[in-house]
Image 1: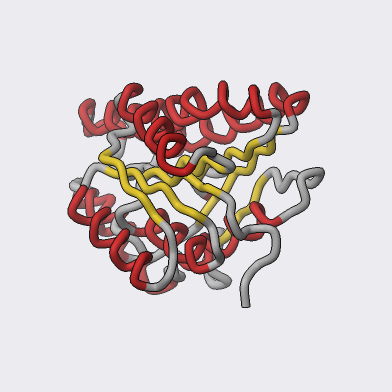
Image 2: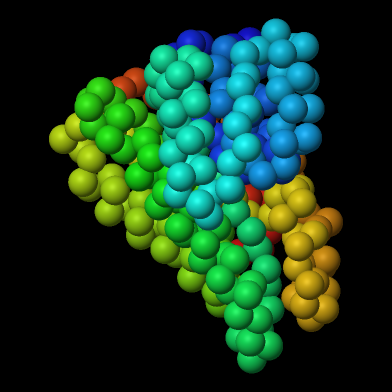
Length: 248
């Protein structure tokens, strides 16, 4: 059964090659949404596009590095050139490189700031002029439960995700006159590749203890579809999705 108010919409999704982004792309396409997929791994994007097309969906792909402003601009322009419109910008790309501050992993700090915060800023900057001119649009920014709390090893990661929530709320207040909606999605423990990039042994062990309760990324995809499906005068400002078993 398809969700109402989704068919024919065009959604741009960053970080679409795996995990939450892939789940969002697959589910939205099954609901009649036209999806424009951006990520750094072109082989994974091509594979996903083939899968969606085989299942009767409509998808395009664009090699995208969200840490590069022109790359994100290119994704939006490609979408407009291919489909003629953009209805939803889903800023999903992110990295989680946990470690204690005393480890001084400066390169990992930079990577999280560049991807998790600046990447979303670039996504907003790429789509906002079009949304304003059209007087309609929807930003969906993926934060995290770590954007609501801080744990040992998550200081920098949490800082970027708190920032995503602050940025999204500021955006919401500014774009109301243009009929633009904003939604923050804050996932808890989700099955994805996100934890595989953690190199710090202590942090890796901490995360390993949470893996047993992780829920499918499909839960996030359904939450995104719910927010998108609301009438234009209803703005789902934030959704937290976590396992029932997750204690915090």
